[in-house]
Length: 262
View 1 (cartoon, rainbow, N blue to C red):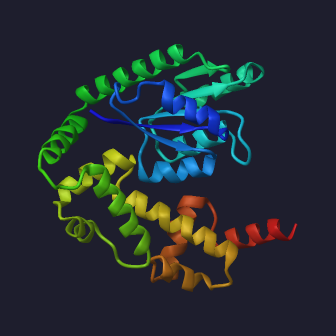
View 2 (cartoon, one colour; view 1 turned 90 degrees about the vertical axis):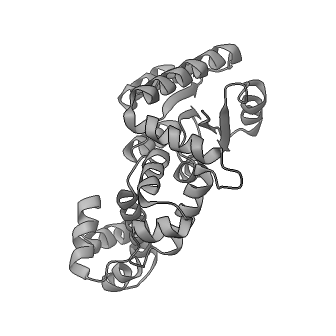
View 3 (spheres, rainbow, N blue to C red; view 1 turned 60 degrees about the vertical axis):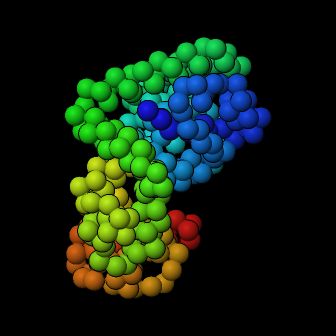
């Protein structure tokens, strides 16, 4: 079974070493890399990582902020922090994020490899004991045996692009599954397994993110913004927005513009 691994470090030489020294192919792992916290979050939205190796000290968004965002988004990835000696006590404060291990720099690559192998075994053990994961794995194996058929990862990447282009439409599971050429039940299984959230949770989250951006960076009315992301009734848009942010759209706009003015 292939697992996704995300390597995050702002220093290119370290990323290159991590990619070349660790035997990822032997461990059946697909590797993605990011040089900033925001880039890492973008990659996570497309390729749900099972394991994340992350440097603590990075500009703009440090490693602890990044893993906090991942956990907030529902990620259950095994997280390994790469830390300088002087940061170690600080790193220990991240226990609340359920970090698996702290690897001190300079990196001892054999130690890191052993930690990754152990994490892989734990992930596979959990999957074997979870009926939902067993079902998904069986379906994915069946689909990979069919020549020419898109892989589950390709299907989910296509689904995310489709959602992003149609946030303002009345988008449902039936339409998306039909577009991908798969059954609704298979779509739901794949989506939850790869994204870590349901289709509705993901769609709502993306709509709220877009609304927050438009409220901050445009002069469109709240009704116009709600309509542009699929909420034709202002009252319902306000209710959903407040449930996710704790603020009404008007309050959010006033706060963000106040910070910008300050």
